[in-house]
Image 1 (cartoon, rainbow, N blue to C red):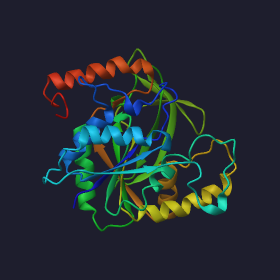
Image 2: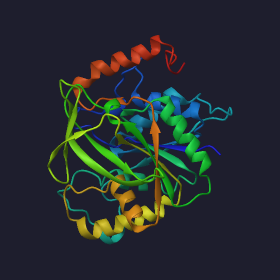
Image 3: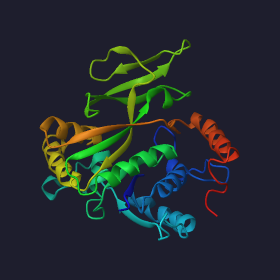
Length: 311
């Protein structure tokens, strides 16, 4: 069984100031998604599903055809690509029409729902503008293969907090809490997380508003989730309840951690917390870009990745 990679690429990158998903950061203009695809293929994934907005769908398709048309899975078969769009009106009909003043789609969990008809095997969800590292994909692929045919057990790949900070400003991270069996109990969002001059890490607990000290080894969510196909039906039911309460709101979004929290608290699912040694990096701010460019150049010099990444 070859798991599927679902790439969330519909975000508009408002803080970054443009479409981060299309920004060439590698030595030969490779995007962050290019590296994720490379690592996923090496880990044994067989299909890539992109969630995009309709206004740049054709641009994405052209880029994929140009870059990946010759890419093969580890068993020699062609890597499969599927494109699905996330739009504001892709919600159950009883909640239409959408408030005409709303501009943003309904969040990451809604984006995942867009793939309901095209994924029938265990799959991994990632952000299109985050670099996760090859070890993270290997860990996730192993989990997916081990859970073929399973139901009600999902996974989050947790990154050590001090492997995810930005030098350009504070970041928001969901800190993972879990029990003795490494099952997720909740994800607590913290805002404006920064490391001070003494190497201590502080952030604002979003629930209480309190500034708290965090541990560098705390595992946090970087939106890397492993699911089996039964997730879609469970999530769809929670989304309906969400819309009953929020369908006229302008900014409320249906996020993956919220969906998982509802399932865990309701007893319909458990979520394994998988720890990765990989170091995350990304372009949260435009100021992050030079450092990310240098990191990819360094990985190429060290031979971690071929250059160019795709011949």
